[in-house]
Amino acid sequence: MMNCVLIVTNFNAGRKKALKYKKRVIDFVLKYTKSFKFVDIDEFKELDKTPYDTILAMGGDGTVNKVVPYVVNTDKVLGIIPCGTANLLAANLGLSSRLHKTLRIIEKNNIKQIDIFDINENKCALRCGFGYDSDIICKTPQSLKNRFGYFAYFIAGIIFALRLKNKKYTMTIDGEKRDIKASCIIFANAANMYKNLVSLGNNALLDDGKMDIFLLKTTNPVIFYIEFLRIILGIRTNNKRAEYFKAETVKIENNWLACHIDGEKKNLKDEICISVLTKSVNVFCK
Image (tube, rainbow, N blue to C red):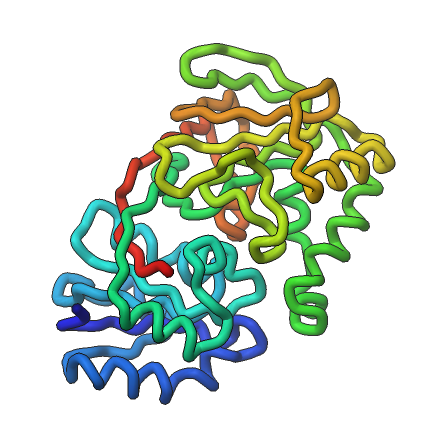
């Protein structure tokens, strides 16, 4: 366990929580090895990752998203130390926002393999969203997140629900072509939102080889709030306003379609191809 460790951090994430954790994380790693390196996320891309068997990502989901492509289909183990606004993947894996609890979990060396999405060669650990979901993630001001933390997304969600718009998508889902009008489309690997309080999917798992897909088809704010309440209550059934299903591959006909991938804004050109890389990443979990 942890013979050679790379610690990757984003000191700006989550009100600079990672900066406060730095010494304690280094002290933890030193219990197992003196072979480690501490780098900022901006240095990570150009660094040679070959020597490291363990990569600890200290930050939010954005930091994890930047690390994931370098551990896909390798023997490296990804450890997440939640320091961001949302920390959704960490929450799904049972990791705690309290540092001592997460370090205790990593210490137990419980490792599982999870799925990752490939979206036009972009790797996605959590979810990809179009329409309403993309607006919330990409347009919530950083100042609002700094002030209210994760609750900022909830505030933005209420605001953006007042200006929902439908868009036509031509999609091929596991070989079946469909024309869909929707104000929001979410492709979820981890379907949890608002920590682990709400899930967009039924029996959504990180290692089932499938993506959970949610379509919201209404532009009426009142009906939207009703559907959102049904999600909170776990009443997720297909109807003319919302649809839930699973798939292994999806293609979307596209001309510069904007979306978010794990919280990072993307403008994707040409056809969008989404597939599941089954059990392709090793992670520490509870």
